[in-house]
Image (cartoon, rainbow over all chains, first blue to last red; front, side):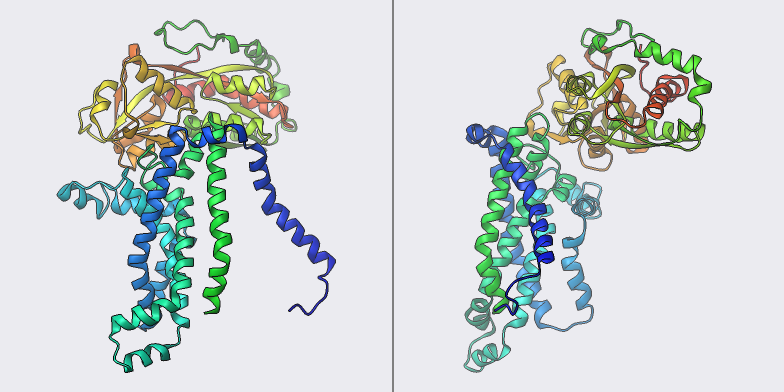
Length: 264
Length: 269
């Protein structure tokens, strides 16, 4: 329902420039794609290893983020406790922190000489660095805040009267959550999961810093793109195209969910 | 200052074809025309030197002394792997001087027509293994690397990566990819051992020297080692030709050579 019939010309010009700025790099990428060798590039050993690993790591990230992020979002949304804003800041800090810094922090905490990594290695023989688990940790560190922030916002908008009504009708706490709260925030859960997945899929800095760059073990898609960019440019472009396609699909299919989540 | 045939092992990489009369011209220029070249007006401003990652500390130090010697002149550095720098220059990134860790990358840039005049070899380097302090896993040779969990090596496109692979192949050591973590340049490769959890890294001797207490160095015998040469050249698009030449002459001259020697680089000849 726009009030103005036509936007001012200057604004249109600036908006067009903005779109061009965002679109031209993608056009540049598309222009360089060698369509005839695309399938071969995507099925090369380096590419398949990276694709498979990225899929595994990013899906684990979503599962872990749901398991640990939703309870935290619920606590943040429903309970007032001292230091809540501090906890909330901590939970969203990785969104603004440079991922490399996150990787260094993970390294200093969970590396073999880290405050937790040392006992973990000395007592249990567990080494997270250079392991797929380490790559999942790095991705979760960076991507989980997207889930927490989305779900917390949704939980805040749930009308507590519905939950109270269910409770007065004899439903237990878990049943209320499962039958009333969860369906209400479902769109946000989906949107948050998709955002988390997309962010995890694109994670580079924390992963390379903490988990290293081992083909088949920690070399996820963005790392493979970076390595392939010199000497193996077509593979780098093919993998970039794959990442771009996935991101686009997520964003386009998310639009409806995202708006739904905001309206709910 | 011509590069002579190396008395080292046959795997020492060969760069004879890149040596040019430039060196002689520079020697003349610095010897004969110093009063003119030192003219403050022609030698002020800032040049950008795209230099191989392994040159980080020595060039930074030389950049400071160069600025002291030439008031009004500053040298800005862009350190990365030589292959990254070569790509940047070919894509038109502003640089006045290119100092590569390999003749291969310099050759690429030369063939693309992005270097004005010839290039000169200003240093050489060999490889070493860096391990955790005190060498807890008792690594004494390239062959011992198969015993460890993770070895950090530069990406194949970077000169340090190409050299490391050549040395491993020459010693008939096959490391499975599951043991190799790739560093984008020599500094990030070394950091995998000094701050990260890699058990060993194959880096240049000049970088191994910088680890201090954060690691131990295991020498690689000459027969298994690889020698790489560092060429330097003027980027064609430079707008500060005089200053760029002065920097190249400085690196090739006694001050630069002394600093490179002190940083464990081998003489160019």
